[in-house]
Length: 348
Image (cartoon, rainbow, N blue to C red; front, side):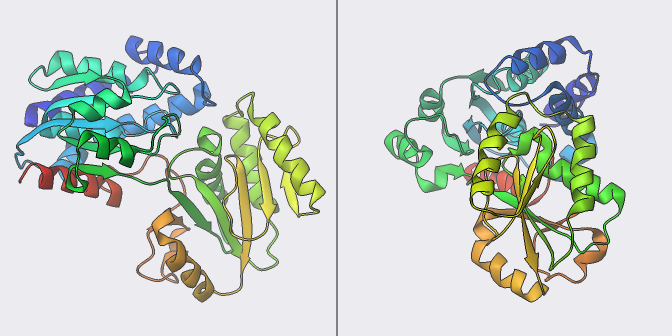
């Protein structure tokens, strides 16, 4: 297990270089795939994830306990270019075999990284297959939301005879931002990243923004425009958002958008909109937000707020600071639950 961790860290060190040939080729193939990710977004995601893969980070997350796992299957989701990366890493270090199903939207990044891992650490068998074959080969399965399969993952698991104890299926989730009007320019820029990276897609995307009653959104809109200056929108984004903007216009609902329709912000009830369209909802007191959160906690990955707001929030909220919601720490609640599932499945 120690050798696998060292191997992963060494590969990550190579992949931190944007001109590393396997990375460069995988990025180019991903840009040609059916998705809405730009080269800037892919490079950002890769750089941030590779920075996470340090010996200290891997040790803190996985530890040294041995497991008796056979084949771990991973059905990788369609929401981000590296969805399920942590699941694959855990399988490579904790199991005898890994079989993964990558989506058509991201066909190259994980297989290219896995190829290097397989070459340098052959005692762990690594392979890729279709969703159905991945499930049929698995002793235990980890699955992310996937909108490109005909049958839901729970049904496919039932058909393959995988019990509830043998599967770890993660639901669609989103994040909520909380602001009070005292955010710094840097914090607003990081909130914009959480809202707009991957064109507003991703399992943990910031989809709702809570703000004090009558607080103007102008500074946040400026931060979103600034982010788009660094991370231009995908060419298909404006057309998608124009349809939503036209609907808001017809409903006479308050909204704002970039001149080139690279993002869209609307004021209204806390209802999740389509990717790239963020909902701005007003609050008068945090108590009301807690009531709403408790009714929706199963849907929410994190509540994102500047550090000085954390002390005013209930202790049970899953608080994070702005920036990096798409690339979380290895050992956040989701990462810890992943390792715990595999340890339980392996009898450790």
